[in-house]
Length: 394
Image 1: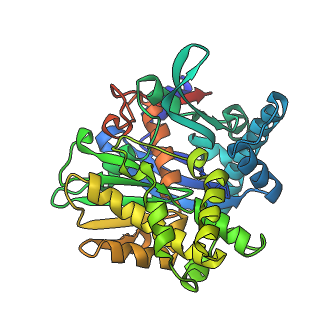
Image 2: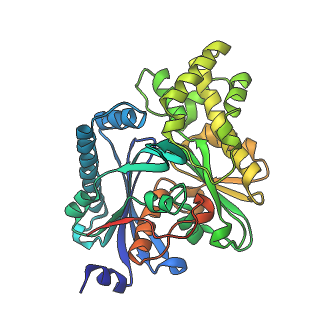
Image 3: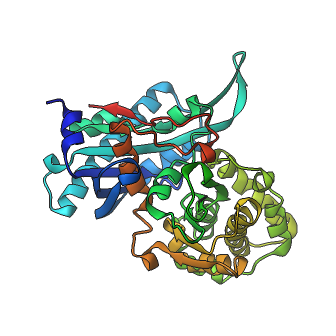
């Protein structure tokens, strides 16, 4: 029997979802039990593991994603290395969960984003969009001995979409409610939100990137601590500083915030170049580094709140926050101040893992792909039609 037929006939599949985001701090690996497909999907997190990237690997990812020139030969090796690391993360997750790797039926891997061009640019006489995620799926398949689905974004872009956000489809499957509007905000390196109007159909889902998530805060934390810290744990450093209103106004004048969805962004906009400009403006205003971090933390919350106020079809009654930023108490406090009429909670308060949510999403997206089910949300990405995202390595 063909391996895909075996998957189709199983009442439940064990699927590993892998996610390494724009923060480039490591790999989220989620072992997920999945039954059904489409609107019949049921998913249960069985085990979760975060595997940090070695410091030298993270440094190289950030440099290349920040625009540092790299030869084709070196990028070839980097792509191969990431595939090895993803495969090793799968094996480590299996050990952590106490299962044999042969029990895993499928892996879904987002890959590491190095560049994302959602708006057309002129290149060699053509107007083109593009996206680049790396991490060789064949190496994961070799390590695990099961099919792997990866490189999801490009199929949506081929259909005229921006290739992001990708998780709204899974959030519509799992989290929509009949009686109230809910929203899910993720703070990874970039912030993104999904708005699920009460009883919504897929074409009514609104989703977009809200601006920077942890990316700018992490960069400022590294500078403030001389590299000793890669993120502001609990938001304590930001809480100890003061918010500069003039600097905050400068940040809020960012044209991306007013741009209407569908829209996506990434390190090419809010990476090292943005941080340099921010620090130049802070220096001009006489704002110290710690106060710049406090201001950037407030900005991250205000950008998310502005997105909801400007673009949500109706105000959400509840906002569930996930991703690494959900552990930043200062950020959450600012978000609650910005949204006084909305219940702001973390995923943990609702009974699911904030850290694992996006990795679980890629397990579900992979499951949909092997069933031939369309797994994008055209209303969110701007695609002309539903498509099956993901390339299959057997």
